[in-house]
Length: 505
Image (cartoon, rainbow, N blue to C red; front, side):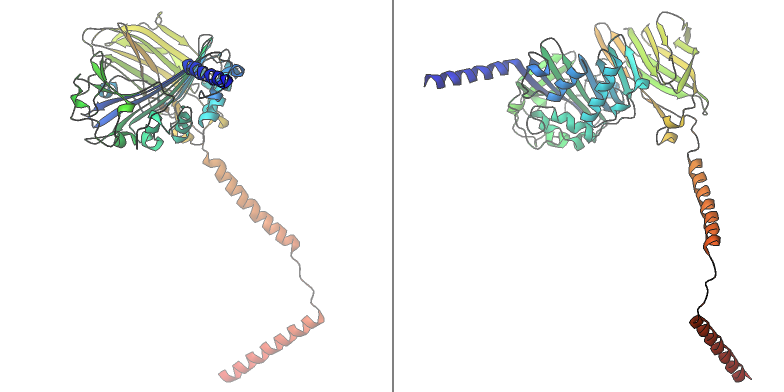
């Protein structure tokens, strides 16, 4: 009896220790946008495990085994993978939870370029994406260990979102993961999916976020906005809550009474635990809330576009505006330039409020591509005064690419990744992204080989057919029976003609 009690005690202590070594929290942020008839939603799932990070040193419970193996195999300290469709509108939607450029972005802290390529190929298989295209021509290096690559044509789809959901401990069966429906999420004005995995000496961290902005009707509920059918708790979650961001601290606007109201700048966060949620069908807001507060960065806006015409030369222009009447902005503009855009760096022009700046200064860093196929990089660091406008422009030549470098739809154009702007005001900082560019390059006439093949095949087939027919055709010799039949046939025809002639006379 004592042995059984000791065994149960040991199992209980082991369970408590295992629970203490693992923490999993999930949160859903809702930001109503009543003036636009939309709602912004942000899912956040954080999973941390303490202990040895080597795959051979741990039993695998709920932390994804393949994530740990990927970190160990390619010697990755940290990586971040982002998929995004659309562009976040700071002026309309407020501060961005996780701003991301259009397409797929992978950044990793690895030892070598080969490790980064291996990581990209492994993640391509896990998330059913074309990350294996992140070859040497699409990778940019920041420092000794930080590698980054962007695929602007990679769009987020259900094939990418389903593996992301499988990384959750309760997947999409319970907890806030049950509120994520891929088809419902992708029918949005903006979608961003992020995965951040890191390891330290004694801790593994997996942070997953999903952000989207969706159109809703008046009196919307969790069922209509998110596609949720019911609310159920994930037993592995140490914390699970739904937070509503409003411009007022009064709890009267939320149907389910919040247990806490937290203030952040000019935003009040009304926190409702998932366990206290009774129904997902009832309206989430009891009454129309006041307009959403403006973004802290509503005064900053950036726009990048193409200039020029034709298929030989072109240009890129960028306009960054600081509308704040008092505070200056410290900006760091970073742009990665593909190899098919041969930039004339001597044509670089910078101007603030129309006054030219000298581009040959310390705040402009130009890194041209060393060889064909590599990326060039442009970085501009300066302080933008209040109520001012920064304009940047340069010219480039459109390259002639080898035939094997063209995609199947080359006539559509070639995508240039979005540029990033790191903006700092006081102690606050954020990242703004520009639009990706679609560059029209001179492409060969891909229909010409098809026409030549068709014409050549037709001519050859006709010539060879006639030649073979001439060689193989010959007059067959008739037998005596055949001659007799042929003679009888001619005799009958002659008699018939004579008889017909007599009747006519």
